[in-house]
Structures are given as C-alpha cells and as structure tokens.
Length: 604
Image 1 (spheres, rainbow, N blue to C red):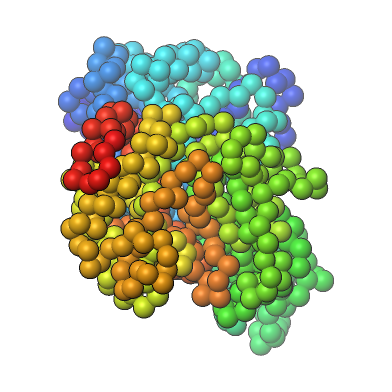
Image 2 (image 1 turned 45 degrees about the vertical axis):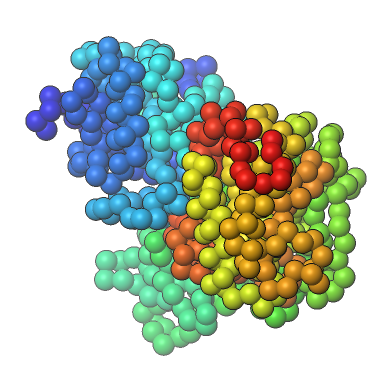
C-alpha cells in the first residue's frame, strides 16, 4: 500500500468443541457468517482490506462514508486500524451471506440500493491508534481502548441490522450468547483469552465454536477429487447442494466409494446426515459428515426440508392442512413464509397490541378475531396494558406461534403499548372495484408528489387487497393524533380540490362511483391497520407488501407469498430505511402544525 498503512495478517481462532474450563480467563463474542476485514482510517485515506490484503472499499461505499464521519470525530486518534467482520445482518446475530457475496463481487451501485440490505462492519479488535501499535497489548486492554473510540466515534452498540459500523458485544459467560446464537441461527461463538496478544495466524488462545445445523442429503456419485456429491429433490429432480468428505473416517469413505462404484446404475438411496453452517448461492456451506441414515427415505430429502431445517421453526401442527385452496398453500408453507418475514414484521410490531384474524380451516371457511392472550400461549406473547387492547409479541417465536394457530391477518395500532402518539402517518387509498391498476398507481404517485413538496419522505405498501397505503414515519411522542387527523383531513381536501374526478372522501361505498376513496379517518388511537408482510384471508393469496416507488411506477403493486420471498431473496426490503428516516424527520415533525396551512375548510 502507498498510504502509510502496514497490513497485518489477521489472528485466527482454532475450531473447538469444548468450552474453556477457566471461564474467568476468557471473553466471548458472536461469530458472524461474513468476511474478515480490516478498516483503515486516516485523515486522507480510508480503505477496507480483506484477510488476504485485497481492497474492497469499492464494494461497501456505505462503510467508507460512515468511516469518514468517524474520522472527523476521532481526528486526534488517527490513524486507526480496526479488525472486524463485514456482514449483512438479517438480525443481530444472523448474516445473509448470500447477499454479502453479491455485494463483494459487485463493481457499481444500483438504483435499488436504498431498498436493499445494508452492510454492517462489526468491529471486535483495535490494531493501532494514533500511530501506536496495540498488538502487543493484552486483548482486554485493546478492548478498553476500542470501547472509548466507539463511544467517541458514534459506533452502533450493539450491532443491529441497518447500522454501518458497530462495536461487537463482549460477554464474560458464553451461555447467554450461545442461547441467542441457537435461537437466531447464528454461525457460532469465538472465545478469546483476556490477556492474549495479537499474533497473526491461528492460535489456541482464540477458539471458535460452530453452531452446526443438521440436514439430510442423498449421495449419488464420487467426484474425481475424491469428494461425494450430495443432492436433494427439488421439483421432481435431483439437484446438487454439496460435496462432502470432511468428517468421514478413512474406513467410511472407502466403504461409501466401493458401494457407489459397484452400483453405478442404482437409484439414489444412500442418505447422510451432514453438518453445515447454512445455505447460500446454491450450496451448503462448511459441510461435514455426521452419520449415515440407513432408515431414511431418499425421497424425504427435499429442498424444502433442507431449508426448513436451517432456520428456527416451531413444531407445526397439521402441516399438510390447506389454508389457501386456490394456490394449494399449506399451513407448513405459511409458517415457512412467516419465518422468513418474522424479523421485519417484529421490527414494525414491537410493542404494539395485536388483533389477529384466524382461519383454522382455511381462508374459504369461517374466521374469527382474537385480541386476548390465551392461557396456553407461550411466554413470548403477553397482553397489552393500554389502548387498544390486544396481544404483544415479545419475540419472533411468539409471532410464529400465532402463525401456527392459523392467525393469518395481523392488525396493529399506530403506536406502541403505553404510548399516546402515533409513530406513522398513514393515508389509505381504497380503489373502486373496477379501477385499473395504472390508475391506482397514478393516484399513489400524486399523493407522493404532494408529500414530497412538504419534504416528507413517504413509504408505500399494498393493503393485501386492491388498495395502497402510504406511510410517513414520525418521531415517537412528538405529533398527536389530533394533529395527524387534522393534517390528513387537510391533505384529503386538497387532493379532492385538485382532482375531483379522481378522489372522494365519501364513506358510503354506493355513493363513491368510479373514484378513489381517501381514508384518513382511521387515524385514531383505537384503530388498527394491517401490518407490513401480513397475509390476507382472501383466496387470491395477496400479502400486505412493502413496495419501492420504482415498483409503483412499473405498476407492480400486488404480490403473493412466493413473490415476497423471491424479492427478499434478492435483498429487496423497501421499509428498511423507515426507522432511520423516522429519526431524520424529528425537526419536521415538531413543526407539524405549520404544515397544515392548506386551502381547506379545516386548519390546524
């Protein structure tokens, strides 16, 4: 390098299966499924270097931008070299490695980047600061310096999805961390001796413990390199998901090789249990042999079974029950969908009193509302204390428990339990039955243009039916329900005045004609709205889907569970920036009454 930085080959942990006996001599950190990197920060130069000293600055511009802000705050400590893990966090402990690979290999930004998962650099060590090498200092001393720099520099603490540069948490006991790793399907834990110096290469004073996941694959062939090809059934065909030999004894490998060579035309029949840390980009990662499964049917080794086994799922009762007959979607399909979106739903539903609608026998049969927590509910579901009444999910486990109860629709108020001010301003577009999709999209874009003129950033989602709902995130406890109600009424009146042939505020359906109904009267402390990513109890199988404005412009408004899962697999998360935007709009929110100067009958 020509910038004055001296790259240090990283210190690496050794794989272990036994926890340290002398706990007081060790500290513990999460092990994320990402790329090991060093962040080099100086006044005139900032760079990201991989563990092999390759420059990845171009691939993660959000990290470089955040580092520039940190450099301004820590100018007296520069240059600094931080050691950490580049991740794309799906939760605090789970990384989307498949998306990270795509980002690392990408050369340029795309227009949809604002609606995709951000990279997070999780910092766990300090190699130098102020031109002073810290490598010969004990780990606990390095962490003390790092903690101070993190506080002064404004690092996120602890890491969470959406943060850019974050301080990795340190534990004095592995047990609570390991419990969370198991629950969130994280990669594992790293144990480090408190007084270890930083020495390049592998060292037994750092140990890693993998959170191995067990899945079944079928072996069909031996490769030229002596590995065995593992496959699963997908859409009636055998597809490759791994090659394996690690973990087998020489005797096991020899016996398996002989069986395959002696029966070249035999149908797939040899089933193995393998250990892996996850699935990304068409293959299982870090695969190791566990055991043979002689009594397991090869046809039970499906791609669905594989992906289900790699993530937390509660026991699904009657998984084969059809909930959406038109699409032949089963209860198991639904719970798997909810598992995929649970983190994002919980980000929105956190602390909110839920009313759910349950369809125990499918969406074509009878349904009922439920807002009271049953006595047999798990501890992760409790009853709200304030208004409106409802159930509160404390963890994703609670949300999935409700899904297993065939709770299909999740309705939530605009505030959290115990609060009295809305967290979002929402206007609901209710089209007439025969409204063309182009007209619905145009209507939403007209409202967006109006809010843009107020410098209010707007998010949009489908209702899961024919409507669209526009969200403006608000700072908590700033704007009252009275203010939002008056403002929304003023907006509705203005839109009606601008386009009387497009809009109506008539509540009676038979009097609306071929006009879009602007529903602003739902903004009330006791009212609820369908939650983002909630399914609907309709035969079409649509989801209340967060949309990008590019999708609205393309008239791509209504999406099924399958559509949503495909979009999320590409990292498409349009509501990802909502909380960040909420914080940026604080000053605007405090001036809320001044925005209500529209030419209407009612003024704030």
